[in-house]
Amino acid sequence: MKQKIVNVWAALSFIGFVTVAIIGLVMWSHSFNSRAKPSELEASVAMKAHDSSIPDRYETVKNPLANSGINLVEAGGHYE
Image (cartoon, rainbow, N blue to C red; front, side):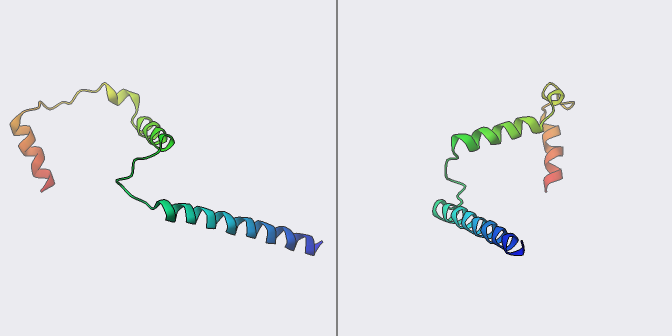
């Protein structure tokens, strides 16, 4: 019985190691680059996550401040 459990753990460990190695090789060969164009799947998932992060009620809310020069100067003071 104990030998069977050890064999199962050994098999799971081996599968985990192989999975991590494959993922590492794929990531190393493609590297992370901000200039690379994302795949269609990645772009789709990112856009869905972005769209779902903003509640629908906020898409119709108007800005209470007018788009005037003085408001922009005052707002710019917060980022200095």
